Length: 283
Length: 261
Image: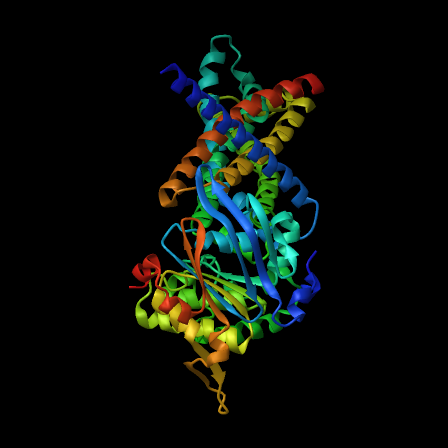
């Protein structure tokens, strides 16, 4: 049944408790046939924090996001997301949890037969009974947030790669999720466009208070997101500047290697690590 | 050597059974999705147009020329027995009981089944289906249910259209080439039909429409491997749907003959 608003899906209890874990992986294992993807992976993501997953291609980074969303199921271990144990839920129950999450896919995964506006407002148009003019206002608001307000009636094929990723971010944030997952959001983009995507991630985290999980192998983007903060200026503008100590503590890096977590810590810990693999990865 | 052959056969059988299991599961989920909420009515209307109106031209052409060629061919054969006036009877019996439903279904398998497999396959490989799930939408309810219902509804309607134009094509040939009087032709058409035949011609397309679209959706949603995979899925959908149409037609005909006659 369609709900009057997304709140009718039920607010996960942990969202109202500050700094409670929004995501919790406990000894999660997953293998595809003989290939082990994840082995005893344990970590948590606190409300309002950023978790950044690094690792070589095929290390299982994107798999972690799919496990969080319930698109995949682990072979063993438990996964809690927004106060719900998602690894045992059926598809219908997962839909309720997913309404409080957003995901930005690697290539955007925009619906190519819909306009930009229809893509961004998809969840509100299709899954709620919100008045159309209200949805339209929200779509214009989020498209303005990512600087694409004038492209609302265009088709995704008319946009550049960077614009498509920003539309994907706008779509993921339109329903005001508490948790946003980014799967390689800057891969294949030029450095300048990547910076605009990074800025959107920072703005969402700091101004909309969205917990973020970022999967990437772009070190520059990972460190930029971890070490910068966004603030609203008195004139209404948004400033992105190097983060203070408090903010730096809210960004954690996780390095995956050989199906296991090889490192977990802050940007500073990662930079100062003497582990040969990490040194080589960072070089 | 024998061991490796044996394991290959076992793998093939297992993979075939898995496909059947997944197909049955999708059909079950579709049936559940059709009778419970949320229901995406505007998608159903869109698919009725795509499958119904979009297939009208090909069905009209197929039906018309099948009726016409049937009249020409059977006219020659019937001449040998001095039975040319019965050409209408032969056309109505063939078209309405068998050729109308089967040829319409085969045309839909080529046009609709392939289109659905390609569309859903592209959505899978570009992660649009995963995006749907991430946005809280069940892809079966959003993508499969409207298409299956549209196929289920439109296949019988298109079959009736094909039958009608088939009889029309037969009439034109009968009158213009075989010199059969118009009234004789139409009387013969009516004489050749029993109510059971009409039931058979109307019931079969429901099964065939369901089969074509569910196979297209099943193959499309199981697409793997980028654009090559989409191409493979499209071919597989057409081949599987066409063969299954003929097989299901046989069994449904057998069943209906037992039940109706």
